[in-house]
Length: 232
Length: 313
Image (tube, rainbow over the protein chains, first blue to last red):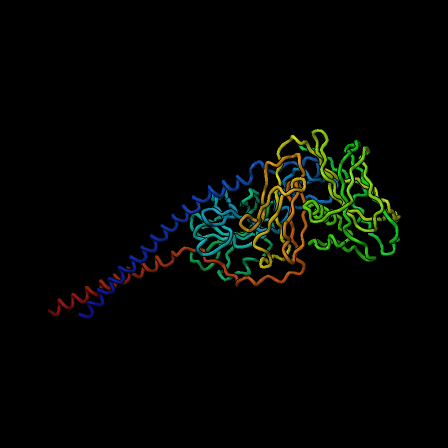
């Protein structure tokens, strides 16, 4: 009688485990869809905010005095003691005036976004949140640290297929674009795709990379890491 | 309307680049500053100019006068002409804001000339107010002038001649935009910063609007639709303790830089980790496999038990 009960318990336990695996799979599929909807819903609002910031009032105008004050020239920002430079109506991007500034953020639906990342070869365009937490990562990719102005930005994303799940498919030479909330565009080229252990914090921050993207490998033990250089 | 800029700067504009040795001049001598304000050779008359005695020469360096000692500004290194220009711009805005007064005020004459004489030795701030002639407004830029000064040949001059750099535009042209951007120079020690600061937009020296800058608005603000017939400036109404202020206009943007010398180190960041960015897929095949295994084993064993029981019966 006891052997029979043990057998029945084993069968029931087996059924339970299969149901549990099915439940986890269904949750993952639901979570995947939720994550896709999450970025789709907010992407349009973030892009609208970027376009509003890039309206004609803040479009870079050509200096009216013909000086060398090119607002996009990060290497040679206009000098205030330049005799040919005066208080004209030129619009110089804030990050040129203050390269150490943090990324400007815009609060949308209660969350602060700092821009969008666009990877044409993966057909990905995603909003980027200001800072990261496990909760925020479920909504959209997050800024891990750095800024595009200092060319040291790191962005992390969940490995949902609609987020950074396809990062591993990037190859050297692929283009990546980041647009901040002021509408300033930054272009990058993929230089290296590597795998870093999940404990490799220093390794992640090492190197002189203008942009780094990372996400978990399938087993979640390591991080697929994409290193990019800035296109000048 | 296309805004035209005709920047003029003469060699005398930044006299401070030629610094004075301690024994270079006789302290008992008076000096003078002669300003000539012209646009393309044509004199601009009836332009008001104000002179402020900003600092005295103590033999080694300039020391702010009592009127300016309370300002949260620093006198830059002698050879940093950009910093001197920025200081002139900053102090000019605060004089317009009414924080300091002077009795030295004159209008330019028919030849566009104004003379301040009987001046003590020291450092002077020249502030010209905007003047409109016909459809054009002329806005002189402030400057700091040393009395006396050394020319490039080392000769000392007690009578200083200068022409201000200036901006001009059509008063019925396009509306203007002015943008203010707060910059913190404090080794990124956010603990030191106030939660907000307030800036005032001055229209011809009068407060036109006030705005609070904080993290929520990324420490910046933009005014639009401003009348081009006026001069627009910015002041930070209360400079945070431990900080100095510098206000500089570049294009439409005023940068308001608060600098803290020797800030304490910011608190250490929390121990860094790499976030978990993976989905929980690995348990699915493991649980499924274990479940199938248990069912198969249980079913086989049950079949064996049942057969034995049947055989025993």
